[in-house]
Length: 402
Ligand code: NAD
Image (cartoon, rainbow, N blue to C red; front, top):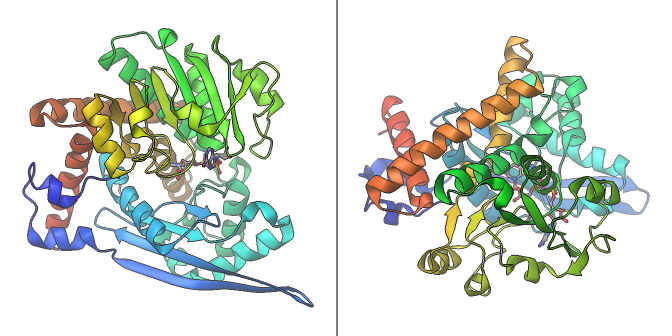
């Protein structure tokens, strides 16, 4: 439940009927098949989707998810999250998302490149005209974006490219940066506790999880547990992140059996008694089956949509603070915006400046959320949704859509 329903939001904000219609339905949904003959007796075929949720603020922006669990429904939800995330960050992008329903990990590099090229071929017009600007998401990475650029030859048609070919220094680390910054702000401004006195458990050791771990360990936080899809590692004294990174240098290598930790199950990680729990892997991992058992004081949503609606209600009653994904993981799209802008203008931005921009945008949005939360006497999620919704309604008014 990354986004609070419009029905619930009506208690806090006046939503014109036309706005409700435009925000309830996707603006555009494309469903197609990626079919490839890859050998005499071999054909690869998979479903693929592109969704534009709302483009009042600008072109549809959102990552490409490559996973066997991809569905049109999931892509739709993720595109909607992007609409609100971009509006909250104040960047001129609409909400988009795409997905290729295949287990990318099982495919060799040459077939993977062919699949990406075919995906581009099927939606070439959307990409060439800049209606949809993809980026990495779960299961995709900079090299896939390089293949897309190789097909369109338009630098701003895709972000999250490798740095050598027009990518942004710091884009790879950007989402982890905003997740770590969000954690820091909650510790200092809400818990009134130094981050170095806080314990953290992180689910996921891919792009978001490992970069979050790196930044938080640099800030001095005690990261006691980290997991991936195979399981987790626990060390009550704090995990040495540098050691873990050399033990599991890529996300293909599990953190299991890390010599300086004890193995734990993913469910156990979610139930640890820590200050911060950071789900940074899959969606809806915290749901009605496990919400009662959560002992963390704060949940920082690193992944998209990691807490479902029922769990959100249970956790709110328990007094658990939840900082929503549309704030916490917005570093990726903030960096994507800088990359897109540079691709158009020829400007370059260094890593330090990228981190400064992310930190500033997250701090500004955090302050706004705190103020609105206090005024509305609401959750952080409602406050964040309120800010985005207000921006979207105003933008749709200015475009004469309402
Ligand atoms: P990734 O593919 O790089 O890594 C995913 C990690 O999660 C891997 O370590 C994997 O083993 C682990 N994992 C997967 N399913 C799991 C499960 N059920 N339990 C425990 N671990 C599991 O993906 P990523 O780019 O780090 O994205 C993670 C989440 O963050 C997704 O929800 C994605 O939509 C969101 N997100 C990513 C970005 C980005 O810039 N990469 C930006 C915003 C949001």
